[in-house]
Length: 416
Image 1 (cartoon, helix red, strand yellow):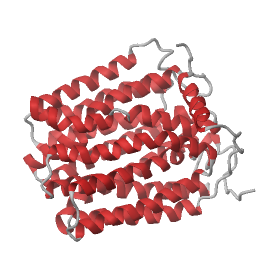
Image 2: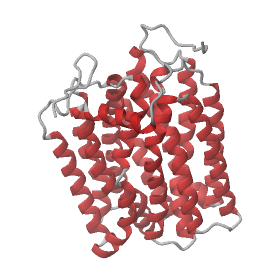
Image 3: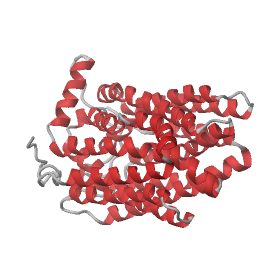
């Protein structure tokens, strides 16, 4: 039996759990490095003479492979050691990012090469993604789970604020290669943390085919109305917003306010995440998914402010409100899934959540550059804000049973 140091079952604090502390440290380190890379990669493509369309293709390569790999990663996360998958993915991601950093530092990089390595990193992120979320209930007792979800997200978001804030500075002083080298180092350190994270293994799964496992995960998703309704809403959100953050934002804000400004905008976004996380530590609404979904209306503020002829502080405010609204929703969303899905299906459900949410993001990333060039950058940003608002309001339109409380005391509605 694995030696797992957990706090007493009656406590609501996750801090006395040694596995939770290792998980928290590892995921926080990854959050720090992963915040630096998008800024460094965007500026690297631009430094190589790439256009908005080229940047969109590089980011889309990551997103496409991530989506393709995630469903199988969910099956792996319910069959094998989640800690082992996380550790292996971190080691390989360290090597992959080191190759990217070296190619940029030596002048050997090209836009196609960055696209290929972006796809590799997308696959590695997919392998660890479902497991890194599903392993949380194995590290803390049930009563500590709400606090653990909030603390984990708050810590990651804090690290990403630091990462986004440093990204522009690192690129400006040392170049994008050295900035991505920092990401490689954080993956190496996180692999050490995940190696030290000892968790109780799940029961050995029955021998089934991959397709049977995927079918069982899909049935679990469609058994909960609140689950598939909000996955569809997220699909629309990422289709429209992915290109705003991955393509138009860096191009437009950098052109108007300088390279450091985009790092500040992403830092403001993450400060919003932090404030939303602090709010979620203290604020637990009865109808947590309904309230969380209502907060998503704030996400339209970021593309809206970038579409208007406003000074940089207004854009930073829009980014902050975006992060705040998204984080209040995300904490309640993660908690609802953790509390209502059987442990042996958690990785698959998180995989379907991720795939359903992000499946259209590669298309949005690839098309944003050409469409924005055709209709105008500001017009497309206004359209993005309008669609994001409409999608959120439509998710709130079904009767309360569709976006229900999803709490153990009040089980989620399963009405079609």
